[in-house]
Image 1 (cartoon, rainbow, N blue to C red):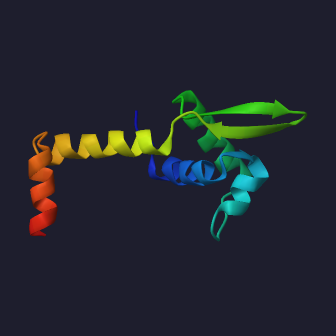
Image 2 (spheres, rainbow, N blue to C red):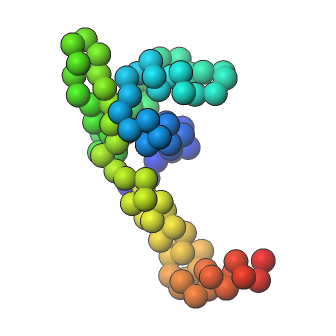
Length: 99
């Protein structure tokens, strides 16, 4: 499963913070910061995709990643090699040595 650009941006923040409340996630965004409803929607979609989950802390939720950054990056790279380099690691490596 893949993340949208907005979801991936939020995931990068969450990987960096490891565990975070909604307000911490919003604070970590560069200006202009997204609306809380936007972040909540992204978190819900990412939860549905099994990328994040949360612990209930009183009335707040502390979010955390279910997918490790290394695993996500590896899967993305493998997909790129498959789609753009005929599933050939050597073609992939050759591209970067010649460019």
